Length: 494
Ligand code: C2O
Ligand code: CU
Ligand code: CU
Image (cartoon, rainbow, N blue to C red; front, side):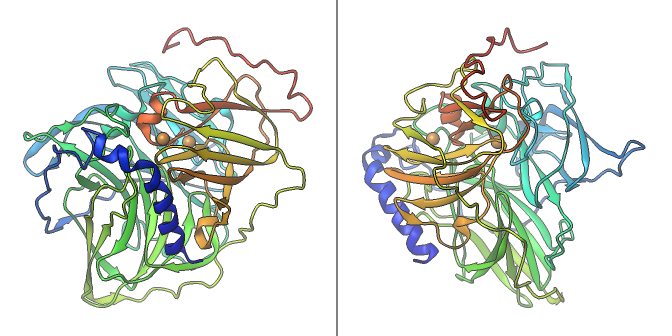
C-alpha cells in the first residue's frame, strides 16, 4: 500500500470517531466563529532564523546562549503583537552541532514566569532534558551540557513547564537544533539558501493584531486560520538552486498538516524526526502532526512558481485548505548535486523475541491509561538499553504520541505495516482517532532512577491537561527495587 492509501485509511479511521466532535465544538475551526481568511499573495520574503554554530572553546565545548524574553513582533503587517522568543521577540536561533560535539547552553529566563527549555529529539541525560522537572525561575539561568551522540537530524527546542506549555509555545518560544554527522551525503547544506527551515505554526489574531485564542479551550486548543512560516506571514522563498532541502517542523499547538504542492509535483522525503532514511522516498503528500519533522528535497525548474499548501483530508486536526508559502525560482538556478541513492546507514530496529510490550490507552485528553500526569509518580521503569514495543490504543479523536530520549519506529497502524518513510526514525507519531499504533522503541543507556523522562500527546492542550506520563531508565535488574514516587517539587524555582 502506498503512503496516500495509508493516509486515507488513517483519516477514515479518524473520522469515524470524530464526526460528532467537530460539529459540537463551539470553538473549533468549523464552528460559526470561523472567518474565512483573505486570500494571500504569498509575497513576503521568508524569515530565516539566525544560525548559532560557535567554534569550540579551549575545553572543546560549543557554547550557546539562549535568553527567553517578552517582546513585540510585527507578525501581521503594521500591527504589533506581544510575543515571546529566544534572543529576539519571536522564535529562536537555529543551533547547530555535530555528532561527538560537547555542547553547553546557558538558558536565561527574563520572562515574568517560570519556564523550561526541552530539547525535543535530543538523546541526553534526563537532568539535561528540560522537561517539567527542570524549571527556570524568572531571572534565573539554567546550564545544561551534554555530548551529542546520535545520527544527523532536525531536532527542536521549546518550553515544557508543567501545565503551561501550550501558552509558552504559542506566544513564540521554539527553535531548531540541527545535528550533523560524518556520514557524507550529497544533500544540500547551505543554510537558508538550499537547506531551508520551515517552522509551521497556525495562529488566530484579533482585529488589532494580538494573538487570539486560549490555548487551553475546546477539545484541541488552538486551530488558527493563519499559518506563519518561521514567523513570516504571507511568505515567499526565492529559489536559486535546482534542488532545495526543506526541513519542515510542525511547531503548531494542534494542527495537522497534509502538505502538497499546488501543481501536485512529487518530491523526496530524505529524513523523518530521528534523522536520515536509508534512501529517498518519492511522494506528493506529507503529513505532519504537532512536533513531527521531515526533511524533503524538492526539484525546481527555471522560473518555477509553486505554492506549498496544506490540504484538509477530513481529519479533525487538519481544519481547512490553506496556502503556506510560495516558491519562486530564478530563471537560471545554479546546479545542485543529484539526489543520492543511499542516504544513511539507517536500519530498522530489530525487536527481540519476547520483547516487553507496554500498552497505553487514550480515552480522552487529560490522561493516559486513565491516569492524569503526576510529577511525583513514575509510571514506567525501563531497563537501560532496552528495545520494547509500545502499543498506543486511541479510543477517541486524533492524538499523537511523543517519547523523550528514545528513537522509535512505527511498526504498524491498525495492523497495517508502516509504508515507506512512515517507518523511518521517529520520536513523535500521529495516532488517528479509533486506531492502534505499535512502536519499536530503543531506549538509551544513561540511567537515573530519580530523574524521569516524559511521554505524552504533543497536542499541547492535551499535554497541559494531563495527557502525559513519566518513565525512568534504570540499571537492568533493578526495575522492581527503584522508588515509584518522587519527592513533590516544592515550587517552581530553586
Ligand atoms: Cu516536544 Cu515533551 O516535547
Ligand atoms: Cu520531547
Ligand atoms: Cu492528544
